[in-house]
Length: 384
Image 1 (cartoon, rainbow, N blue to C red):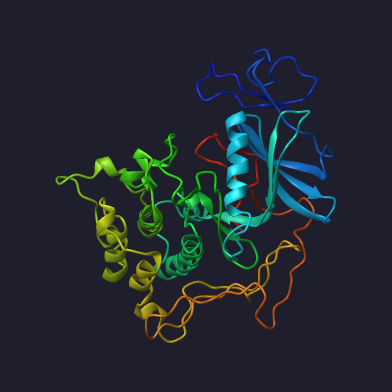
Image 2 (tube, rainbow, N blue to C red):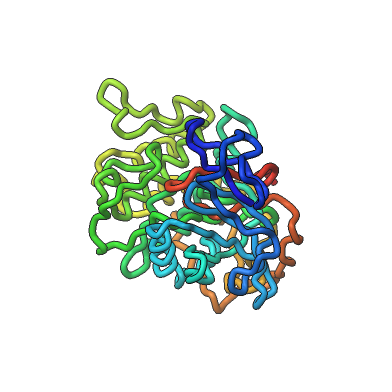
């Protein structure tokens, strides 16, 4: 396929044309600035392309079959030299991370003939939290449901921040949080902006404004920056309103407490989210665990109630992923110590679901949203 990237119309045409087309079938302009996509059946090393999941100005995401493992992967491709370097950096940081709420990365490589860079990772059927919000536009998600999401996200972030040096995600937002189709386990994805503490401020400012803390605009971030972004994400889920960019918050127009926008919300959760979104990082929670305990020590979790309906815990949908079972939210009588997950100790009674059906079902690709304009194929991001 040849994707028209003519920018005369502003955001670009982005129509998919046959490989033999000289002019765009949509806008009629000559196909001079195009994005060449792999056709189904094309082999990229040992990955056989199945279909295009999405594309943007600098690359594409495919569902591909790993012919060595006999399973599906999400294969990201970029044509931009700077993004090729980012792919390798992203892989180097996250390749050793093993956690049920994080995607599994297989490899990063460069095609010497085509000049493209590739990143192969776990293929995750499901939908993201932005789509979950869009199922009922303008309606906040139930607090119990959001607390279930918050628990899993805190688990993922605590794991990242426990690394040596700590790993900072730097792009937490509803779009980058996937709900797996069958198990309803969350996956925090898109590590394109990931940073290891001690690496120094980044010279490139890449962020998603409503969810980015003030310090990220200057390139300097730490664990508390992720706490702000997580708080902003929960603010969006609990109020159905995109949080304001930090510079829009002044003494005359302060951040509206979530419970003022959603009267059904408990004051305790509202106050925890507000503290997480403090403009001065010194005023936020000192750790994700502290934030988690402030939210989850609530009546909603007493008496054995789980904040969200979670399917029987199971292993990752990828047959070669090393992850054990994912815990549902526990009953909380006293502030809990963070659960310990051991790759060598899977929980009893678990089963491994079959790989996703060939070419069927809703699918989410892992995408680098800050750098590319996401353009999903029709029907690919339907909620499940």
